Image 1 (spheres, rainbow, N blue to C red):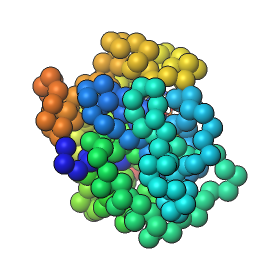
Image 2 (cartoon, rainbow, N blue to C red):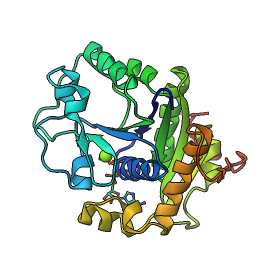
Image 3 (tube, rainbow, N blue to C red):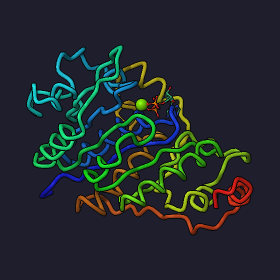
Length: 264
Ligand SMILES: Nc1ncnc2c1ncn2[C@@H]1O[C@H](COP(=O)(O)OP(=O)(O)OP(=O)(O)O)[C@@H](O)[C@H]1O
Ligand SMILES: [Mg+2]
């Protein structure tokens, strides 16, 4: 691919599965043959290193942004073939100038990666940074608190003219859960995929390996691979052509709730 395609993995609400998705999606893209870099830009609770069992790394994202190290020097090459610019737990959340951050992101855009996947902390702190991304994925769980929060995020992305879609994570397909149609209807953006809750995920974190590698064709892995394949088809010019069907936007359970909350 000529220039890297940059995807922001985000959520308004914490703990919905951003890091889990970012790690597994990156590995699934890599397995489709792409060159992938995963950036841990969660300055509050960076977790990519822990999820993948990377050695404590002296150099991290902030060193690179501050120009103390080049992008290349900041990269950890992992056993599963993806490159990672790790975060680091620190007592104080680092202060970054927006100018330094912009300059760094521009540098990253000039690398030869096919995909830049960025794991983030909940919310959007600095609106201008959005211009760097080609697309944002919003991870939600199929419940009202998560989806109502996501509406704000869709609004901010829309204002910034940033293409956005939703990925539903930890679905258990219970009657009390919001359906894909309910969610599409509520957040007014398409649902790109629905990923089930799966014991494989905590097991993979324990094993410090990507879940998609541990069990290639399980329910979780197949759902993540389907989303990766969508990018292969739509952006990367590869893939086996498994299309992703967006919902038809019907539904209504949550719509009524929106009206009650005056969000619509
Ligand atoms: N599909 C899934 N099935 C089972 N457990 C999951 C799934 N996705 C995530 N989890 C679990 O949910 C928890 C939160 O996941 P994760 O750390 O990826 O969320 P996050 O959105 O990155 O959190 P934060 O906002 O703190 O960065 C973890 O314990 C993880 O094991
Ligand atoms: Mg996280």
